[in-house]
Length: 150
Image (cartoon, rainbow, N blue to C red; front, top):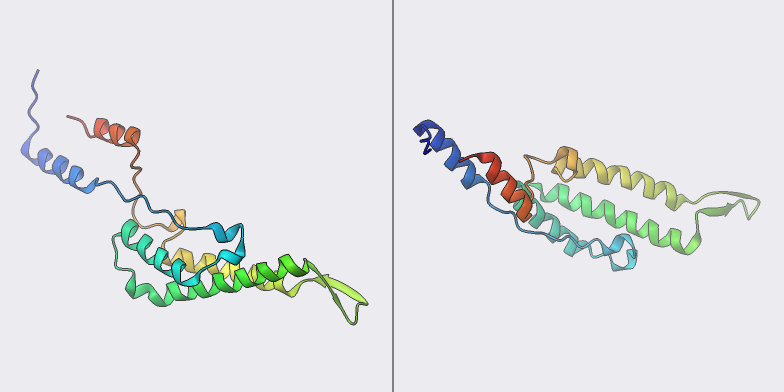
């Protein structure tokens, strides 16, 4: 049985197929999370620009101020992490009489909150991402084709 799709539905079907182009597999280097000494601010900035342009289809250059702020805040976070690794979470104050939380811990906590706020503005968190991100796995593409119909 050969069913013909009405012309108005053919336009929709062909438009959907054109939109479902596979996205590039972008790998962001996040080794600095395990080893803060490998942090590279310039490379991170380039990676974020590339990621935004490939996932959102938007020119990232109007957001360069926000991307720069994000890189700066992560840079502060990494510096605090390096100091925490060396000095520990507890510091001595008042010539060793009292002890308390390291100042680096509170600075890292504040910068982490700022990082998340900036990431939300840029659409880099899953809940704030612009549009939908389609999987490019063969199984997912086959399922999408099946769901699109004949």
